[in-house]
Image (cartoon, rainbow over all chains, first blue to last red; front, side, top):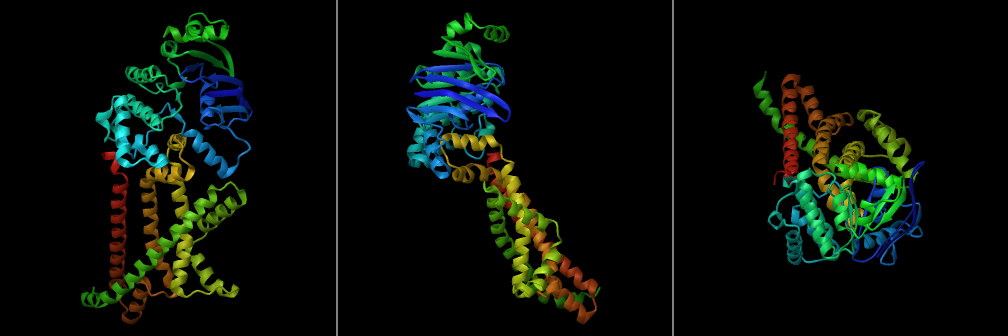
Length: 249
Length: 218
């Protein structure tokens, strides 16, 4: 489904991704953990082409995401198409504040798929219902709590029926008591066998839901394994010390 | 104060005030397109075009409007660029305020959190649609306020085109003073008329601003 092959990325002199490989199969959930600055967010953003990689290949369902051969408008068209198949959830939600909750969710299907407004509203209500916020459909984002905002953002990302969902530290900006409601929605998606690539600081959550866990540090994959094994019995020293710090809290 | 005189000259000044409004409105209208052109040029990847736009903005902002006006009106004909006074007033007014407006537009667009464009792009929207549907509606409140300040500048700057004998409010006032020798009365009335125009502009801006920020209170 998602293939990441030998991906390199540098910001100026700093190489933040040093040859990353990862395969995400359909219906699988992969968690990426690691200290800040390890490159995990950059990797996730590269999958959505929000970061442009310098070397390597990323593909979604066999279609290549990065296409150095395409320039200008041809690339625009290509990437817009690719992105419609991926749902991205951001740390800071990035809801559109000038649109009501339901319009946040239905904007993409209406404008990109030409879904008619009535059908889009029904579809949007379904999605809001899934994240438990149907009653907030006509409210503006400013009136929602952080947890509610992130749940709307998940509904918005689901609206284009993506093949894969990308979560970039979806609960990191939330007050501790609001984390669980977002995790609950993500668990729901997991039960429906949504393919997910999750960058997270929530070790317990990563252990519970993922099929595969990957520990990154300094732009490389230090260790990857079955989550039960990686979290309880890591082999690498760097993984051990990272987990000691994070599992204690 | 000669109140009878003030009443007598009012109709003539009102007519001239209309010219002030007309010239200002046209300067703003065309200036907006100049500004959009400059913003577009500065968003291009081809550097020389960006430099050209930046250089133009710097040149306009670095020289007095009055000098720009005189240069085009009196200097233009020697290179075959001849405009009648009214057209020249609108032309210089538009190209002057356009430079300032381009900065106001750019600033308001850049004030929108970059995560907004990212979220839009990640859904599959293109650059143009992201700008129109996501960024501009959020840039609008600040843009309206900044452009509003410039609209007031345009109204007040328009008094300077009296120097190239456009019969607007200030020129008409001076003409009437020439025949009546009553500068206090006549300039008082013309000043009052400027105030009315400026406050009307501010009212329109306030309405537009409220319209653009409605979502923050809903």
